[in-house]
Image 1 (tube, one colour):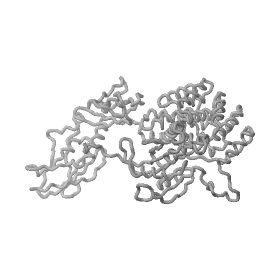
Image 2 (cartoon, rainbow, N blue to C red; image 1 turned 45 degrees about the vertical axis):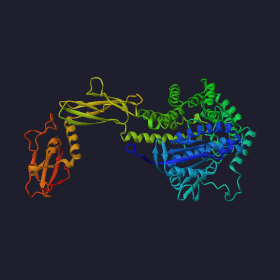
Image 3 (spheres, helix red, strand yellow; image 1 turned 60 degrees about the vertical axis):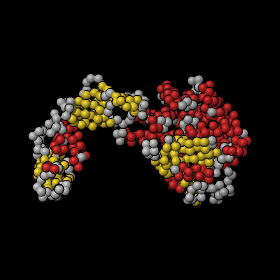
Image 4 (tube, rainbow, N blue to C red; image 1 turned 135 degrees about the vertical axis):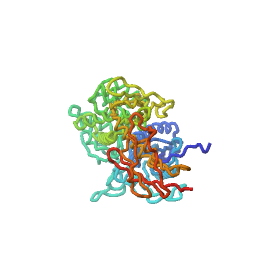
Length: 629
């Protein structure tokens, strides 16, 4: 049993460990409320992880372990998490707030049954225990990876001894409470008096705007982390978020922007009921602004869960507002969410935000399961979205223009990645042709799992299936299609059309491959000859020990113009005669062909050089003669 165990899989990955500070106390004070809020918080937490390209691989109680492909993605996700929950906590008294502590490390791990093991996992957990509530601690390697890729400053906490590790860990704290370049909490801006804390300043601003009905515009210090925006919900109202000046009213609805400002401030101040009332009022106007609907969905989901958000938006989704219908579609999961988004986009092709959300569903949401057809659909949606931006058609759908920044950045990155994929030809079908004495065999290579392969020889006639193997492909759960076709030697030059059906049941575009018998024969045989250089010559044994056989080269003579041999290290000059190529029996050896050369007793080695059809010459191969008894 031990011998049959599969080898452990190792990889380099970034680990994010998180737990809730003082969770035991919170539970002891009000167990039912704490558990209910933990469930809502974890739902948002998990959404942010998935949107950042990560996965949760272990969780227990209030503790969560996640993996990411890079330290940058893990850190950006951690920043998004802390920013989101800092705002949500403002709705609760200080002693009832839930704060995540997060630690991030990167290194080699072992994967076993979906779980990850290794020192890097332990280090992430220890870094998390060193983090203050609402903060992030990272290892030195993570700090070096993200130093110039986030807008957050970091504080060097030096080397720390941690439990169960024999060596200290160099720890850095990412300060999510102030932007890069800003003075420290205890520092002073040169030439000025100490500043009030940002929360206090925001409360003052909130009072001013509420008192003046939003007429006075106050410009906040603008900063934002580099992480992605969660497209399922609106970005959380953030006291350190985008400048209020970014919320620009449309010319025909100036009151909408003012009321939206007020709703955001109410949400930040913890007056969620009042904020929800204003968001509902804004969503009921029937405008195309997506911000109020997304923030309403986010607020309800955080406080009451998915089902409540879906129910509330269903009541508002009566056809008057495309924005509400968009937010309602996002409350579903998987295929149903994509189906609803695409149906809405088909009915409203000018509603550009839908294109970004559809692309996100086809891309990140499917990750390893994305087909090439999905990738083409994603690329088309991204192009529509970015075209709308180039034409200036996006700004009319958002009140807070800062919402578009992360969307546009992500769209451009994904489009560039997809362009590289197709430029490298990773979507193409290829065929390798091999001659046999019975005809031609074409071995088909597909770019992704398939459930059927079809081909057509020439321009006429229907496509035919290659058939199925008696084996199940674990990637599709269906029988594997036969990856080959066969046709006779007498086949003239023609085009072979190929297509396949992917694991989702979508047919690929037709790929046409030119087949030219002469060139295919030469190419196939040359590839074979170059790959078996040690077999070009074989020495006889026993009574044939005075012979050196070149039978292999005779079998692949259709790729060769000349074979030259030499003795005892001399350059090959003696031409070994080859029989003519027979396209009808390309690898057959004629009965009257010369197979070998006789060797004098003084010969210690034979050298061989090939000249291929077309003039290319091989390197000289040296074959030492075995010791004779």
